[in-house]
Image (cartoon, rainbow, N blue to C red; front, side, top):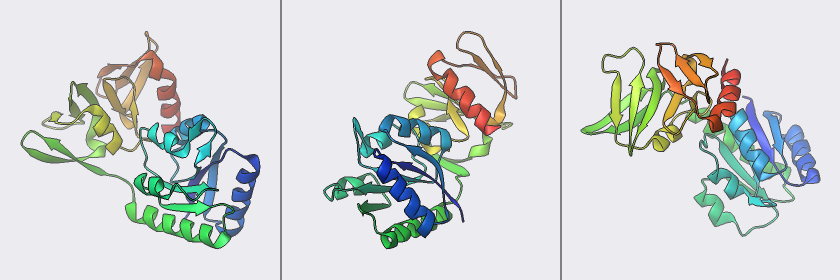
Length: 236
């Protein structure tokens, strides 16, 4: 089993040390990115959607906890790496898989990676979500979701080729977004979240307009345009 991982470490030497230890003791780990700052980490994690992140806690102007708080989706496991032993409680509250003290011992690193492999293997891909509706709950296959639209504190979920196309959910759009895999769904506007599999074309009007395969046209905000186009290209 290959585990796609990102290393977040603000010291070059620390980055090299961890990379070498992983290469030697954990060949199942495929390092797909390295970030020296918290800001770069947020962007890299959002772009590459890793399964595992090795996160230093002190990152200059940001902390590892700050990085996690700025991410819309945290669909990955976190192993904190630090020279300090006084962050254990915060790491637990952040749902970290493990907490390794530098200098990291190869045996402890291997055990942490094996734990990550078990969790990742057991979790598998998300294919359904459970959402609250007015009179109960609804199980919705994620492949059926065409797009979502914010409606004040509620959300309209529009389903693909479904008899009851619009489903009113008693949760805000941000809550629904957190449930869906970030590599398949993209927030294109404060009002809209789209399934990238159903994007048919993009028009360069104003911020832009997304055309879905059923002909639905949705506005793309200027602030989200570049991220959307980048994510769309990775999904092709």
